[in-house]
Length: 339
Ligand code: PXL
Image (tube, rainbow, N blue to C red; front, side):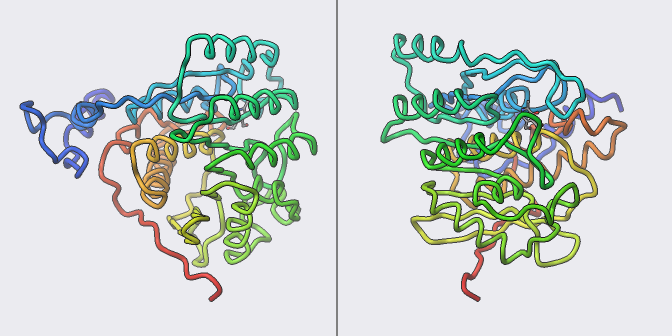
């Protein structure tokens, strides 16, 4: 079956989830799931998304915009840099936009813009950290929230261009956030923990499931209400965990799934974007995290099933429907602490 027909068929066949089961306002009940989902959105959320845009390789804004759009949010990009391709491609070129960020913010102030979420990811310089921090202070309100995805590294190492100063700055920025979403490597750098056990190896090498849970709780001590750690080890072999801690409730959640033998750049951006969209939509922390894990897991499975260049990222285009449908086979379980 040609690609388009197959995708359309799948989108149409997915069972209606509870989000769309509450009445269709006179429209046909068998509307395709995306249309039905969008019909329900009457209060369009606006997100200021502060990331680079990488021309090639799915990462940052190239990922965040489609994910958040598919969740019915308006994305307002504040680009930090334009890259020829993301920084894992050898020889990438980068146009740093530090000097252009404040004029964009100034115009947004003149326009009187208000955002429902302020969401930062990859930042290209130390000065950008200061600009973003001031932006959070100025545009943060009682009724919006800040998400910081402290994009710095993976598999035990920092990305090219990241250094101790950037780590320190990210720590400060995390202190301004309601939600932080580091992977295990970034969590280690933020907490000043040893990461050499994981260097270049499987992400979870050298860190136990229990230690990763402690890191997740400790991150919330830096200020955020919700700390989420991805690519964490699970207790059962062959599985991988995403951990989420709600500081106010004192509750830790674990979402486990099968560890697939592949990893793609940009999946962290897709994950953080899906969590942001879910929270904006009114999902609870465990609901938003379970949906984001489901989306990424399905995306990795679809990518592995196709001929692909791993550096080019996850084939998210094929699984955007996961953001609107019922989550299946992935659950957030409460973790009993101090066991
Ligand atoms: O996916 C994180 C990311 C974002 N932006 C750029 C990157 C990366 C990861 O490699 O290189 C430019």
